[in-house]
Length: 489
Image (cartoon, rainbow, N blue to C red; front, side, top):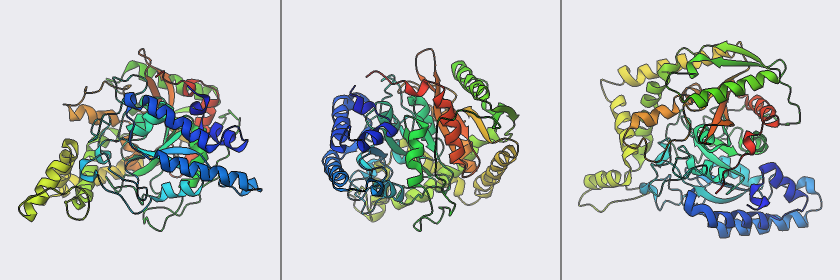
């Protein structure tokens, strides 16, 4: 592997700034690696190589022609990829679905535009579970993405394409979305770092909606430091998104300090459950012990309503999906079936345009919202969601962060859960509560199982405390080697 395609975000930016490499050379190196290995991994839906090289040339020219280097965009020339649920003007946005196979949006998502304004270059859009509904990236209408650590296994989902692309060193960083674990679980399965921010921290404008009260734009990279470098450029109030929050975005300045003296780390028993893979529990408990060696105080905490998170999520998220996906009726945009009348056109467009998992969740949501059942199901779920949120608020009165596993197992084999939706849903049992509570969480690698598959630890923080998560995660990575491991492709 060329050293250029093994660069972290920090190394890319340093190499660009000191003239070690040009943006054209960097982008071309990644594109060459993708050309060689993408048939094995299948991380992308759409590559925009020509456009990326044109923008890279413009970035190099700007760098050459600018005398005051301090005035240059801070991420100038950095190539990244984005999940195909985020819009990029004049580039198709499929959401992994047949129903949007030819949809070309006229606008760019705010989070993406802010990174473009900061100088990044988008080289492609990554594969995903259809409309972000899934935990394996097997629900894509296009192809299944393979885990670079073991090509017979899933990369996780729904942002599996982005996670696999970073793990395979196709790109130094990528954006995803996280509604119930769709950044953190694939980050764990692929041995990389992934951030799910506080709800409202990053604008959802241009993020195609799945569950509007749960959706967040997240990020992947090899290291926590990498994510901290571009997170501040994405975050902040956006007039296009009424749910974005006017909360100051702290400047994240990570250094070589590894001391966690005074930090209180909560460990909830509810996240170490019967049936979880022993290697996962062992690795995460050892990672927590490592935090203690760095000076942190380990404090038992309780999140008593955790066991209700799975049923609550699968009432709220499908209900919101049922409403959000009603717009895909074959008239205004997207796939439209040939039919003899309007009603038949609606039926055929949605029946053939949506995959089985999407249809399953639409039906679940429609039922939960139907007359006579709304109060019993959706209304009750919202009440329990409040209790889950209060669990975290109570815990954070006594601790600064909470440490848990990301998932109960390592990456499972492709097809293993295909005929068992409940087994697939259980893969997100440790990530769903965080979305219901709206708090931020960071996934980072902390070990391997006996088959050399990555294991991830999850650090959870209070609302808008992403900078604290970065500091703790960075200290952990400065004193461990797990994040430096790469799959051999």
